[in-house]
Length: 330
Image (cartoon, rainbow, N blue to C red; front, side, top):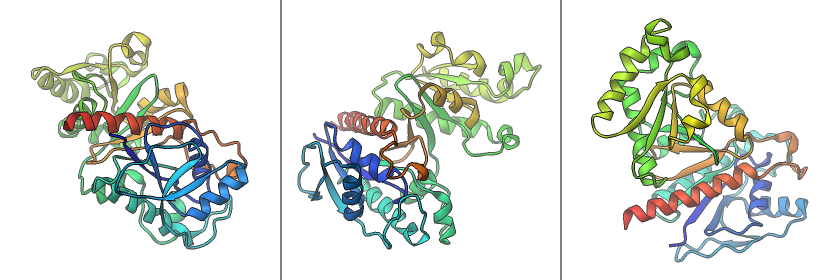
């Protein structure tokens, strides 16, 4: 079955709309459905000198993608978008696109969603409480726990904790939190990545993974007991390993994903290896969601110099994950 990918270009003053225009020029085994203002996409295509045609989104049957074409589910801007200039008037437009695309996935009209970069500050300046895509989607989908994963062609890195001060991380790495994260990661590696027997490399929290308790006891008292309980069920879990030795070819070749304890333990390595070509994936939702690994790049908007690599990778992941999810329902 041809998947439909719901796309939200994100902040209208940023590079998201033009990146969508650029990847729409490529071949894709899916129907691309943009939840956006049609005039905005037409204007950006004209500025880039790229052809684009927009057709109303027809939910009756998927339409194979043709380069230079996008199906459109129109969402109107509140005010004209000016390149590189944020406008609080369009804050709710950004969220309206997200709501419509999310609901389309929840209702089965689309099989995955890909999100462009948003500017959290302008949404908050408009008086709307918004801490990010992940939290917004979890609330919209009525899910309590989600897991953040970044992925590239070389590795996948999931996180136990995300946006916390470093001083708050040890207390947040509890047996319960580690168990919930492992449950989601293991399930989605099977169902959406096609890993029949997922192999997860788990990092320690402390330098040298605690060095036998001499540099911290979280590995001994929290991490290892949880891993042992899952190994008893037949799960393939490697670790806890020191982060400074885990990210080596010898170890990475043995695993389907790395589980890091905190944000800056795992993500700098992945971003160094593949910045601009990586993708942010939210695990634990009832829908598939991928996103670019960069921000709105207001200074590049309209210049034609923004790199569409991350959005193209996010598209590929969305299509592949939708295919695995569909095969699991047969």
